[in-house]
Length: 399
Image 1 (spheres, rainbow, N blue to C red):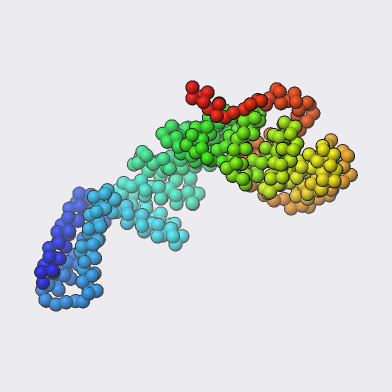
Image 2 (tube, rainbow, N blue to C red; image 1 turned 30 degrees about the horizontal axis):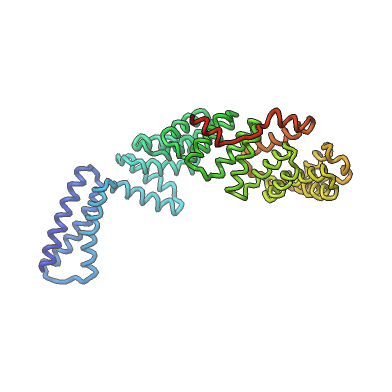
C-alpha cells in the first residue's frame, strides 16, 4: 500500500514538471507524454482504490508510463536535447530506412512549420533534397542550419560542394577559403579547394592550400599526390617527384603516381628507375596500357627488341590507339613491322581518373615528347631544380 501511495505521489510530481516544461518551451508535442503519464497514474490510482493487484505486467507498464518516460524527458531537457527534434528526427530516419523519402521530407517540413528551431532538422532535410537532385533547395536548408549553428562546418562544406556542382566555382572557392580560415584542419575542404584552384590553373595557390593541409594531415598520401599533380603542371618536376614518391611510400597501390614517376625519371634520362616505376604502374587499370607502352620504349632504347615488341603488343591489345602512336614514334622504327594493326573494334574500358590526374598525365607525356626532340640534359638544366625539397620550401614560407 505504501509503495502505491509513494508511486502516485512521484508520478503526479513528474506530471506537473512535464506540464511546466511544455509551457516553458511552448511545445504541444509534450501533450502526448502527459497523456501517457495520465494513463499510468490512472491505472495506479485505480489499483490503489480497489486495493487489488493487476499483475506484474501492469505494474511494469505503469512505472514505464508514469516514471521512466518522464524522467528521460526531464533529463533530455536538462542537457538541452530537444524532445520535439528527437521525435521528428526519429520518425524521419525510420522513413528513410524504408526508402520513403517523401514521408521523411513531409515530417521534417512539418517540424520546421511548428517552429522546431533545429539545425539537425534542416541538415537532414537538405540531405534528402540532395538525394532528389534538388541542389538549390538543399543549399537553402544548409544555410538555415548555419544560421542556427554557426559552428556547423559540415553544412558550410556541403554548400561549397553543391555550388561547385552547379558551376558556381568562384562562389565555391570563396566559401571554402572562408571555411579553411575558420577550421584549417578540415581536410575535405582543402582537397576540394585545391581541386578547384587546379581547374582554374592557379597551381601556386593550390600548392599553398595543400601545404597548409599537410600540417594537419602529415600522413595523407592524397595530399602528397595532389601536390605532385600541382607541381607537375608548374613544370617543377623535382618537387613533383618528391611528392609522388612520398605518396607512394604511404600508399603502395598508387599506380597513377608510379606512372608519373616513370615519366619524370625518363625526363631525367634514368631509364632503369623509370623501368621500375612503370613495372609497378602497369598493375593499375587506368595506366596499364600506357605503362606497357613506355616499357616498350625503354627496351627499344636499350636495344632489347624482343622485350620491346612483347610490351608494345600488350599495350596495343589494351589500347588500340597506341598502335597509330607507335607507328609515328621514332624509337620504334627498328621494330615498326611488328606493331599490331586493325584493332579498331577493341572494347575500351572506362577511365576512372579525375580530370586533374588526366591533365597531369597528359602534360608529362607531352613534355617528354617535346624534350625528346631536344637535349634532355639541357632540359634538366633549364627547368628541373637540382635539389628540390618541400621541407625547405615550407620553412622558408614560415620565416
